[in-house]
Amino acid sequence: MKSSSRSRRTFLETAGLGAAGLALARSGSEASARRDSVDATRGVQIAIATIALDGFGDEGFEHAFRIIPQLGIRNVEFNVWFPRTVTLEGMKRIEEGCGRTGLQPVCLQGSGFGGNVIKDVTHKLWLMERIKRLGARRVKFTGARRGQEGGLENVIATLKELAPAAEEMDVLVLVENHANNNIETIEDYDRIFEAVPSRHVGMCLDMAHFDGANVDNFAVIERFHDRVLHIDMKDTEARGVHKVVNYGSGVTDVHGIVKKMLGHGYTGYLLIEQAPPLSRESLLEDLTRAYKMFRGYEK
Image 1 (cartoon, rainbow, N blue to C red):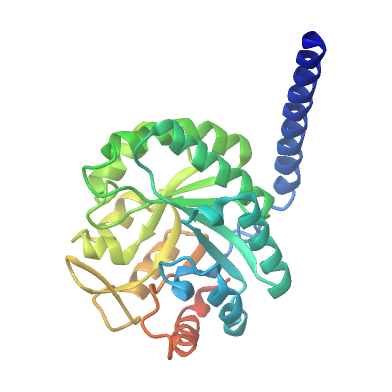
Image 2: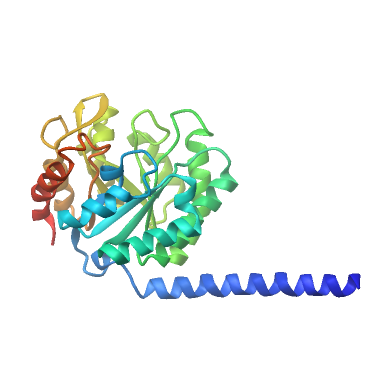
């Protein structure tokens, strides 16, 4: 009886693993046939982040799904920072919501690098697999507070493990700068790209965070324009301060930075990430104005 139970258990485990492997293989092949249109055409498209609608709380993307269709923007970066948003059920809700509203997921931004490298790799690989299922190829992460959670060393250790998978899956891993963060300076990116030369790992240029960290955006572009894979468009109140304000009200030269990158041949998404919402009452008006400011860059 014991032998029979063990045999049955072994069979079920083997069958389950085999089914999981087949599912992953199918998802990779299906998604590779649905390569992002912006990459297929080497174009430039506007996208918007859900945090520009939902803020930093877990709103279940309620505001995003309600307001984004009114803006005329189709491309959406989903900020999946909460446990229920990264579960299989959470991913299904994103897929169903997009099907209902006509939106297209183009990127998943997960919680940042830091802490346990094994857990970090597992979490990032899961989002890489799920973005392929959603028909796109970008995942985005920043770091932990500067000097904490293993520092830049842990970021690099994780990226070294992710790079081969990113190449095999044809997923772009976007490494985003933040002020007061393990990923903050030109020197940080020098170390990252020296250790991880894969072109499937690149920079998400967050212009307001560079200004907030007193890092010159144009110096960043001069050095890394060929490694920038994603651009977050934001305006900050002052140099050395990261406090998001309405486009044109702060010190960030949003148009100048975008034009400089386009001059270097940038293709991909220009992300509206004016977050958190500055006013619930004027949110639709603020974001409509933002889209009108930037949609001329689409091609």
